[in-house]
Each structure stands twice: as structure tokens, then as C-alpha cells.
Length: 368
Ligand SMILES: *[C@@H]1O[C@H](CO)[C@@H](O)[C@H](O)[C@H]1NC(C)=O
Ligand SMILES: *[C@@H]1O[C@H](CO)[C@@H](O)[C@H](O)[C@H]1NC(C)=O
Ligand SMILES: *[C@@H]1O[C@H](CO)[C@@H](O)[C@H](O)[C@H]1NC(C)=O
Ligand SMILES: *[C@@H]1O[C@H](CO)[C@@H](O)[C@H](O)[C@H]1NC(C)=O
Ligand SMILES: *[C@@H]1O[C@H](CO)[C@@H](O)[C@H](O)[C@H]1NC(C)=O
Ligand SMILES: *[C@@H]1O[C@H](CO)[C@@H](O)[C@H](O)[C@H]1NC(C)=O
Image: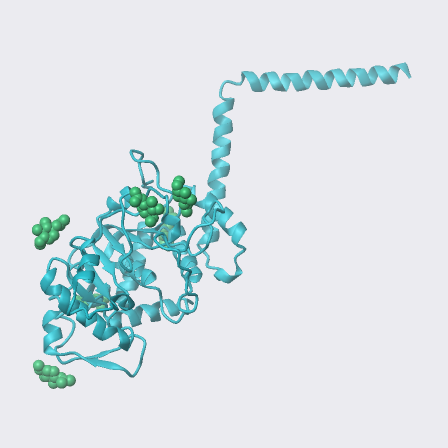
């Protein structure tokens, strides 16, 4: 009995000695702290690599468990972003080959004959006969295709931009694309605008535009010298509204060119993405112009594209940063477009911004 309890005592003592010894060793090891940091860092890197692989494979957005998805995405967005030059060039070549924004992004005197029949984007039978008058108002050539645009910011209207403080970073881009006459301000979305879209339905005014152009002139002058792009040949209802806007604005605001998407360019983009499994009635204008930017810009940064109703921290956000409207789900499949953007981001072909931007003064970008 006695020897048993002595043995227990001894064991206990040994355990204590060893334990303390270990503690002492840990305590006095001079580089414990940095080796533990190195360990955490290595684990972090593995985690990031795993997420990068995961998000570079497309899963249908329908199959996503939103809560887990946003948690992982939030982790991934804290990983250093890896831009990949090879991927950027590959996408540029693919898009040039299929769609050629460089030569046919918008209708110009060079790529359109004065008597040409323009086939509507969404119809195989309807056409519009170009005429001398309209032809004379088209730009000579595509203004942005002579040289490669540098860093482009494509700014969607997602409520995720609210309180983001991204304005300064966006304004630092070489070329800024915006949509649907969205409001601008210096804190969250920036002011610089080089190209902005108008949805033809936004051109319906109570009074005829030709009689009273003031409301339109006022709306577009907010964007300085930015070009205005309209899908004039998407649907037949778009055409007369768009041509009227062109006729009204050209003499009053010559510094703000009004241009029309080439419907054949948009049809080829549609085929390109359908071939990659993205099937929807019509691509969103945002997705179209991101595709254009991937061809024309060196480096594409995407802001305000987030199709879910809570942010990465799970906080509810509005659908748009500038109004309280709800999405129309019939036309576009924004979540399906989003998983493709996420894939392009994971592959290093573009940079998606989903978090608030860093405070002024800090280096906004991780150029890796
Ligand atoms: C960049 O992309 C190319 C083409 O997909 C790939 O082969 C290469 O491994 C990528 N580079 C890095 C550093 O990930
Ligand atoms: C794109 O269009 C331009 C102008 O029409 C043409 O010079 C160029 O060869 C085209 N590029 C491709 C890849 O088709
Ligand atoms: C368009 O006009 C050109 C000359 O300007 C002419 O050669 C051509 O036949 C016309 N095409 C059509 C479809 O009318
Ligand atoms: C933005 O900030 C304001 C003021 O701090 C706050 O009231 C509002 O809820 C925030 N909105 C979002 C979408 O985070
Ligand atoms: C806008 O265009 C006008 C006329 O071409 C020019 O005087 C002005 O400097 C331009 N403004 C900016 C900000 O580029
Ligand atoms: C900027 O715009 C956002 C979104 O509309 C709004 O929440 C914010 O209050 C605006 N900030 C300023 C300074 O106007």
C-alpha cells in the first residue's frame, strides 16, 4: 500500500517537474514568439491557398450556403491578393478574339456603314437601317482603344459601397466606369467618371426632350466630361429615346460624347459567356462593361458588385447604395455573374473589392 502511494507521489512529482521544465524552456526560448508567429503565418498562408483554390472553381450560386460562403469569403478577402499577369493576358486575348472591344465596342463611323442594317442585340429578325444623319453623329473611332487603359475602376451600384470610404481609392484610378447615372460623392464612391451608362428607360421625361432638354442636361453635367454610353439597339423601344438624347446633348455638351453600344459586340459577349455556362436573358450592363474592361484595361478593379442582402460581416445592406429599390430578379442572374467575378478574382485576373477601403494615408493596394 505504502509503496503504491509512494509511486503515485513520485509520478506526480515527475509530471510536475517535467511540466515546469517545459514551461521554463518555453519561457526562456529566445525566439518563441517569432516562431509562433511564423507558425500562425504558415497556417494562414495554407488557409488562403485553400480558399483561393476553392473560389477559382465555379459552383452554381444557387447551391451556396450563404452564411458559410460569406464567412469563407470574408476570410479570403483578408488574404493578400495575388494578381496574375498571365491570367490577365489570357483573358484579354480570349475576349479580343471572341468580341473585340478594341474594334467594335461602340458604333463608329469606322465600323459602321452609312447605309448599314443594324441588327438588334436581342432579336434575330429586327433591324434598324442606319442613315446619313445618325451616321454623321457617330464618333470617328473608339476613343479608348488606341492605347491600353491603365488601372480601371468599374463601380457597380451595390449597397456594399455605403459607408465604404472607397471614394478616394476609386478616384485614384486612371479610368472610372459607372452605371445608370448613379450618384457620386467623394467619401464612398468617388467623383471621377470617364464612362457612364444610361438605361433608355431613364430617358423618359414628362416633357419632350427636344422641347426641354434641361433636366437631362442637368443630370449628365454632374459627370463632367465623362462619355455617356447607351444601349440604343438592345430593344426597339430604346432606339428613338437614345437618338433623341444624342441629338439633344451633342450641341449643348460637346465635351460629353454620347455613344451607342454596338449590338453585335454585346451579342458576341453574350455568346462568350453562354459558352462558359452563364445563361440568362441578358447579361447585366455591369458584367458587360467588366468584360470590356478586362480587354481594354491593364488592371481591373471592381467595386459595388455584391448581389446579396447582407455584407461580409452579416450586416443587412440595401441593394443599391443610392436608393431603396429591390432587385428585379427576372432579367439578370446577379449571383451567377458574381461567382464568375469571384473566380476571376481568385485567378488574379481582376481585383474584387468587398470590404471597406483602408483609411486615407494607408497603402490602398497590395501589389503582389
Ligand atoms: C498564373 O496563371 C497561370 C495561367 O493560369 C498559371 O499557370 C500560373 O501558375 C499562375 N501563377 C501564379 C503565381 O499563380
Ligand atoms: C478588332 O477590330 C480591329 C478594328 O476593326 C481590327 O483591326 C482587329 O484586327 C480586330 N482584332 C481581332 C482580334 O479580331
Ligand atoms: C451602301 O452604300 C455603298 C456606297 O456608299 C454601296 O456600295 C452599297 O451597295 C450600299 N449597300 C447597301 C446594302 O445598300
Ligand atoms: C452608414 O453609416 C451611418 C452613420 O454612421 C449609419 O446610420 C448607417 O446605418 C450606415 N449604413 C450602412 C449600410 O452601413
Ligand atoms: C472638359 O472639357 C472642356 C472642354 O473641352 C475643357 O475645357 C475642360 O478642361 C475639361 N475638363 C476636365 C476636367 O477635363
Ligand atoms: C455618400 O453617398 C453614400 C451613399 O449614397 C451616403 O451614404 C453618404 O452619406 C454620402 N456621403 C456624403 C458625404 O455625401
